[in-house]
Length: 55
Image (cartoon, rainbow, N blue to C red):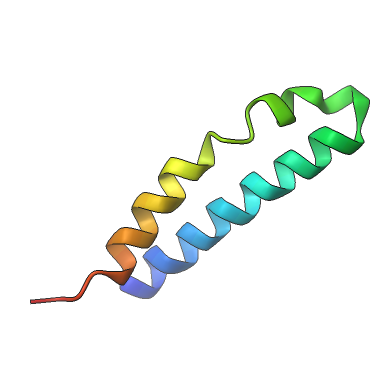
């Protein structure tokens, strides 16, 4: 289950980076650059849950 959280978190952060890059390079998709930060909080939360030590 932890691996799923880590993979999901990494995918969210990669998606945010891809949204930013596509928004910068394509003038028709500038809204992606304006909203690239939206998946970042979910990615951070998933990474926190995925890297917590179990008790």
